[in-house]
Image 1 (cartoon, rainbow over the protein chains, first blue to last red):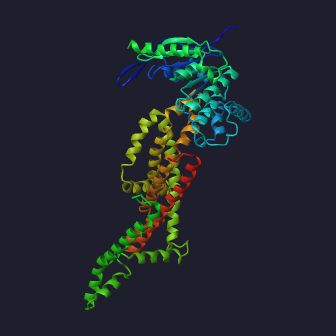
Image 2: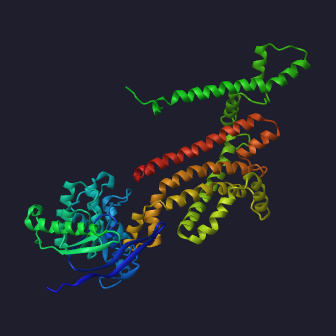
Image 3: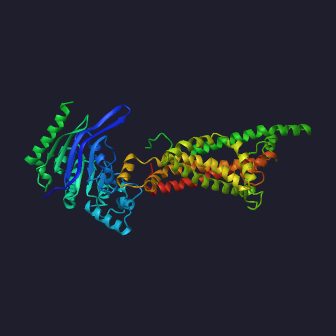
Length: 260
Length: 296
């Protein structure tokens, strides 16, 4: 099978000018992501994992280097609505129902009324929120709100899904459940997913490729191609392979800290 | 056991009654004090001495008192509302209605102007830099000094009657709306703006789908300040306008002819008008914000 490249990052550098002087957020980052990959970015806070995701989404601009998404610049990719972005907070509008929240990007992009309804129905099914269309965000639990936010990012059917610690604020049990659902969703839609996390088990469980990052300056210290099978029940986390990969991630994180 | 030491809504009534009673007692006291000299003069002219009871009852029932008693004011209000036709210039309601219309028009135009200016300021740096200082300066000029000039200037180009008064009411009411709405339109979080950006939303879409709804709580706060300012503007505007009518006009003529009952009844009516308008906005505010789940 020929793998087609979706995201290419070469020699990326990003420095923020702050009141306390320049902060080197990303240094010499090189990365390739293929279609259908599930890539996790893991590292301690300040390692630039969120910044890297924001660069891919054209929310932050690199100081130097070259980034392409679907073969074009991040800005062109954003303008052609190439990706859906899920933020750390669900960011649902309290004055809109769940259905109306999911519909919001479709309204903005000018889909017809029928198409809007059809798509909302479809993505709410995907995240198992059918029946909650008319509820308001405050009537839903945190996990359900985040699922609605994922549905919203999926609604316009972009090939790429960028997720910035979407389950970071949720408790362990809800998180496990959502991870399982997310894997199913990824398998059934064949989307390319970039997923920022600071949890090792989450990264190993979900990913086909794990990018280990380190702070000051933010950089990539290891890229691990996962050898886990595509079908991953939750129990896989007790397997030998899973533990081996986890160890390698941990070593990468530690190595990044030693040379400070 | 009720452990709250503060005042909850159940026992607000007692303190309010206490304060009102206190004010009324003081008021009657001052009525005696201020109206007594005239009684003494009269007694002197007629060479009689007044007993304390006579003095008190006389000072509380003068035809043209320096300070009318609360019951005289209430009597005046009753007389000029219930016993007069609304179309009569002697009716208090006639004057309240005039001030009410001026207030509403001034408020509507002021709110519109305020919202437009706020949008301009939020979206355009040049507007923010050039207009904002003038907006602030405009509010430092005493409206009492400005009002006659507005009346004369607009009158000279053919805009008499209500127009100058509406303009003055607008002049006072747009300011809180600008200030509140600039803050409100800027109130969405960075995350919400970024989110809109990931969908490549246009500025107009961001305005209507995000900034406007987010600014609703700020809008209502501004509206309450704006309508109160508009009532003041309408009354101040009526003073130099001469013969148009309205509560300001009534209070002014009361002052000119020494009719304190007209002044006090006008004052009460103005307070009641402003209070009711604010109460109406508060009710709408509560309903809308509850519906939008934006209560804080």
